[in-house]
Image (cartoon, rainbow, N blue to C red; front, side):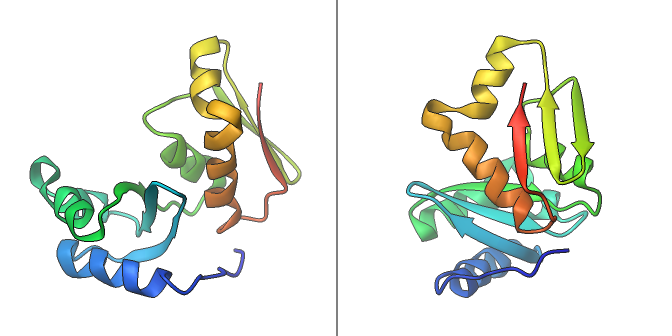
Length: 138
């Protein structure tokens, strides 16, 4: 497990999410247009709420898009949760490098994103909890 580095906004964002959803937030971080919340195991349903009502309330209060990821103790399961709704044929761990393998060009494009933005976010989320050097898509 890697030590988390929190920025100055993180405690406030997590507090808003926890107050509205009653889900335990393990971590959160943001990019320019989205806030990412990592919630504890079994807390995803509570965080989203019936029909997405909790997420909508959090989005309104914070004024940004929200993505919620359920934490998992194993690297492969956590990576699956981070990339959801995309799925890959295989997740390969080789030392500190994780490879996401899929034959579909569409899936690879979704995982990488424009100018590598999605892949950078996947790397950022996974590196916050696991000792991973790099995540690659092939």
